[in-house]
Amino acid sequence: MHITELNHARFMALALEQARMAYELGEVPVGAVAVDSLGTVLGKGYNRTITDSDPTAHAEIIALRQCAVAQDNYRLPGITLYVTLEPCIMCMGAITHARVSSVVYGAADPKTGACGSIIAVQDNKQINHHTLVVSGVLKNECGQLLRRFFQERRKPSS
Image (cartoon, rainbow, N blue to C red; front, top):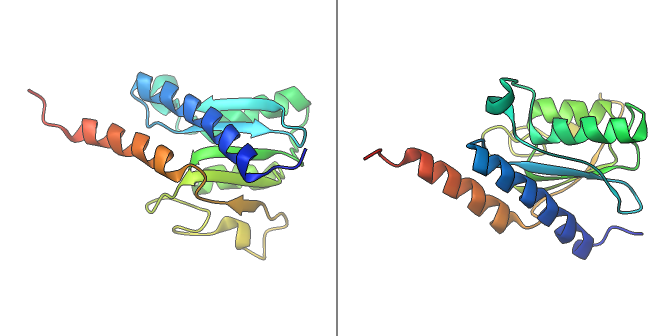
């Protein structure tokens, strides 16, 4: 199977389902799914930093952990990671070390995004693995969920 724009949208929709789970828990609504070259979802996750009291419990990390267990390997070549928000530096570090083939994200993160917003980890020539990055898939849907979450947090309590 070749990953097409239609497939990107389909897998990003699955990542959005994960993000909604985070939203319901009061976590920043970010979701991720790890997909192999045949289109099989091998890992999925949503932000759980507050729930787990774990600063590393980002959606991407959880999805990568599940995928690594499913493949019985810490290296994940041939995997595409779909994430609703541009990965941060920590997540791009894990993605790079795991040798993930590509990252597809929805909404850009102008404050901590490490795929081009504040830094482009994948473009650093000194790093020995370069992950392909595709941005903007279902960006409106991804962004709207995040905006709604933060608007609700900013409302004065009655």
